[in-house]
Length: 247
Image (tube, rainbow, N blue to C red; front, top):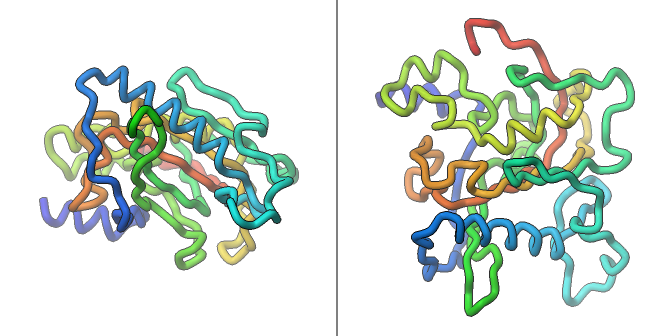
């Protein structure tokens, strides 16, 4: 089993979760999961109200002291779509591929410039919001190189067959809402890895369309993603057909 996880970590994941220093420790999981689902939806809308996209498509929080962002549009004011799972996606105007845009299929190999964070929604004195966060992936502020096939997007057959029990299921690794929404976008036709990024949009996934309260791959050895919603800010640098023996 140790070799299995070393193999996974040595692959294309870069799913390094770390806890914020100021994480709120008073969260109490609601017994009724529908309450958590309601918290997620409310917190996502608040997040959309509190953030905007900068000139390169990065999610930025509005400043309370700097007036330079006063004319920026809130995420909530941008055109967005809500999928049946509750996942919301925003396609950034002017940032989609126009030359040979590539349709994304459910089994495609994807190359992504991406920032992904997980957020826990809770109720504090009657105010529902995200109360803590984990960094999942960040190629934008990291090494600046796109990521190929992160496990939260696609778990290859070889990885699943090398595991046992629930770890043989794709749902153990993959974020359903992200997979669902990314197929609504088009990929660029194999941009060079060093190409300057121009992020295409945002995908906001409530916990019920992520891992909810189900077992999941231990992306962090210390912290669970139980009840965590996820936010993805990305550009699809390219796609390729996946060999049948990897599906």
